[in-house]
Structure formats: C-alpha cells, structure tokens
Image 1 (cartoon, one colour):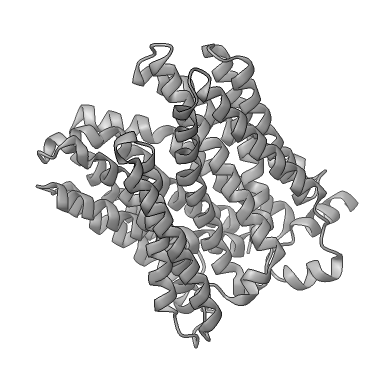
Image 2 (tube, rainbow, N blue to C red):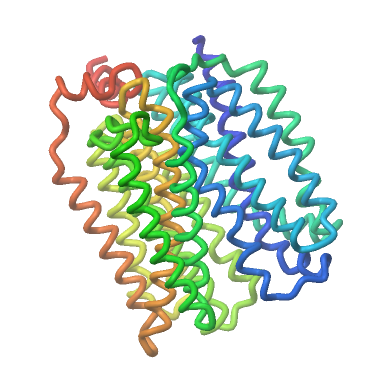
Length: 467
C-alpha cells in the first residue's frame, strides 16, 4: 500500500476504536439522567454500568473468529452498522429493560468491530516503523476517547438530553461505514472452511459476563456476597471452557494460540496494564471526592492529564522502539506504571501529587500498551484475528477484576487502605516489568516462524538502525 493509503486506513480504523471506547465513557456520566428519564431506581445502576462491558468482553474472541471466517472488513462493517442501529433502540427507550438491552447490544456490536479493526490495521501497516506508528495511534485513540467521553457525555446530556448520547452515534457510524468502504482494503477469510465453536463461544461469554458483573457487584458492600458467588461461577465456567476447548476438533481459541509465547505474553501485559491503571484512576477519583472534598467534575479534571499522558506515552513508543526491542519496551512502560503508583503513595493527600502520579502512570500505560499489542500480535497469519480478540479480552478482564480487587482491599484496611491498594498495583506492575525484562527474546528462527507475515516489529527496528 502507498503511504497515503496506509495513513487513511489507519486513521479510519483508529476512528472505530475511538467511537467504541467513547461509547463506554460517554454513557457513564449520563447514567443518572438515564435512570430518571426511564423512571428506574438507583439499584439499576450496576447492571446499566456493566452490561456493555460484559457483552463486549465476552464476545471479543468470537468477533475475531467471525472476521477470520467471513472477512474482517465485512464483519467490521456489520458491527459498525449494528452499533448505530441499537443506538436507536437506546435513544427511544421508554423503560429500563429497553435501555439495558440497548447498552448490551452496543457492547456486542463493539465486540464485532474492535478485533476486525485491529486486525485490518495490522494488515495496513505490516512494516516495523509503520507498525509502531499505527499501534501508537490505536492506543492514543483509545486514550483520547477515554478522556473526552466523560466530557462529551456530560455536555450532550446538559445541552440536549441523555438520549443525544445515543443519537450522536448515527451520523458518526455512517461516516465510518463510508470511510471503511473507501479507504480500507478487503481482507480474505483465512478460516472459511472451519466450523465455528458455538459451545465454546457460549461458555466464554458466560464466563466473562459472570466475572465482570461479579467483580462490579463485589465493589459494593451490600452486594459483595452475590458478587463473590458470580466470580466463583465465572471461574467454574472458565474451567468448563478450557475443558471443552481441549475436546473439540475446532476450538474457539486455536491450540496454536494457546501455545504461542508471544500471544500469552501480550495478553498478560494487556491484563496487567488495565488492572494496575483503571484501579488507580478509580481509587484516585474516590480519594479526591471523599477525602479532599473535590467535586465530581473537579475530580474528572484532575484526572484528565492521565488520558493525555497515555496519548503522549503512545507517541513516545515510536522513538523508544528504535532503541529497544518489544519486551524491554514493555518493561519500561510497566515500570512507569509502578513508579506512578508509588508517587501516589509518597504524595498521599496532595492534589498535585495525584496529578503527578497519574501522569507518570499514564505515560507508562501508553508505552506498555503499544509494546503489549505488538508482542501479542506477533503470530502467524491464521492466528492474528484470534490474537486481537484475546488481547482485548485480557484488557477488559484486567479492568473489571483489578478495580474490584483493589477497591475491596482499600475498604478492608482502615485509614491506609487506598495507599495499600496503590502499593499492590505498583508491586503487580513492577513484577510484570521484571518478568518481561528477564524473559528470553525468541531466537530468530522461532521469531521468523511465529511472526511470519505480521510482526516485523523487531525486524523493522533492526533495519531502521542499519539504515
């Protein structure tokens, strides 16, 4: 592809990522107005807040496999169109059932969009330096959407109504569909003759939904028992899923994917990234409001530099990638997350310290996200689609389980609970960084075999240094 074509395709695909992430955060600020608008009780908040993430996280791997079977551009277009269609369901909701259903279906549509979009982005930028730039743009798009979502959702709700948060998706989706048709090349189906593992898909969706909903409920003392039971159920379903995968002829997660060291490492990095930063942000928000008396809007502004730092960290991964291989690069990013959490402890009680800590953690997240995605997608052609689904699933579970675990820990330790939770996040990120730095780099023969055709990340580094 020509440079202009690559740039256009990457921009459009990052736009898909931006819209799907914006769909998560923009709705958060509108939830109170939604509940009032449909005359629903406050008790509906946990389900309304998590149903998107439950279906999104549960269906990501299936979305990736559908792209492998039917073509990633085709599945992407269906996902974007479905996202717009179910937004109409949400915008016209008259009761809480319709509203929850719309949010869940939006999550399902996003799961059909994100893995194919990332897979097509890898196809559009197959070379080392271009790959790094594309992955940096992908991470930056998600971070920017995360930062702007709260402001967009609040602004639309204040200016018009909460229904505008749904209606705005229609013109945006139309633009994306046209742009994908014009700028993103078709992708061939790589598993056209393979039977889809529907039993595995059902078990995986059920397991992820139970884990995410259970983790969300466990954050609240009055629902902690139910949340714990759901987490246990999720773990049991995960065990059943693994057992079913071993027995079926065409598993949802191919056996080669399970054996891939790169994919396992990339998924681990994705999980730790979100587990140690999403929890940090939530704890900081609560501390600012409950301990320092900062308003919700003020807390949002205090934490806005976090998302901006993720964008900056993603951008810096390109020059850093010219000097470091992927695993050391990921270790640097995870170390930044650890240092950011430590700064939060050392400056406990200071607004300026919280700002400094989240900036450092955000920059580390930006670097680690690009490196983790590069590692996890360094797999053979027929595993690339599955890799995108697993990486995103790891990130979703990291957010849900990390936030729940650290909120429970913070509540369990009198006085110093928040500091202890930040310390645990710092320790987890530091251990992951150490493991990544000490992990042996695959030898060139294995690297060529495992990453053929898709991840010339290290080769691009080597060639650029030689030039």
